[in-house]
Image 1 (cartoon, rainbow, N blue to C red):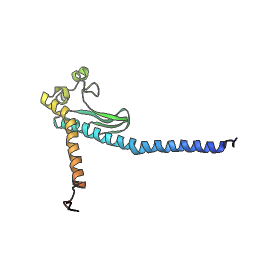
Image 2: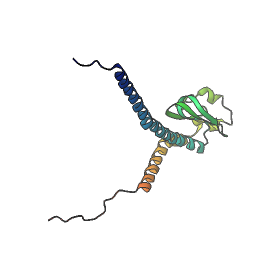
Image 3: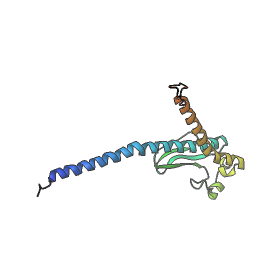
Image 4: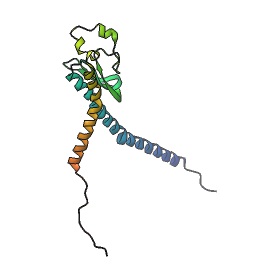
Length: 172
C-alpha cells in the first residue's frame, strides 16, 4: 500500500518549518518592529522637546524629560537639574515640570505650597495663562514643523517626478 513515512524526514521538515518561522519572525521584528520603534521615538522626542524648549524659554523649571515610560534604562542630569531618561516602554514620553504630581502635569498642591520662595515663580502652575498655553501647544507645533522640514528635505533630495514633454508618436 505504500511506504511508511520517513520519521527523520518529517522531523527535518518540521524543524525547517520552525526555522522558517523564526527567520520570518526575526524579519518582521528587524524589518518592521525596530524601524517602527525608531520612528516613534523620533516623533516622541520632537514632540516632547517642543514642550521642553518653550517651557525653558518661559522660565519653567523642568524636573524630567523622558522618552518612554516605566523603569529608567539610561539617564543623566544636566546642569539645570533636568533628569533626561530613556525608559523601558518606548511607546510614549513626557516632560515633568517641578511641582507636578505626575506626568500629566497635574499640580501637586503640597509641593507647590512647600516650594522655595525663589522656585515659586518658576513653577508651571504659577505662570500666566499665555505662557502655559504656549508650553502646551509647543509639542504638536514641533511635530508639525518637523513634518514640513522632513518633507521639504525629501523634496530637495529626490525632487519632483515629472514626465518630459517628448512626443513619441503622432496618431492620426
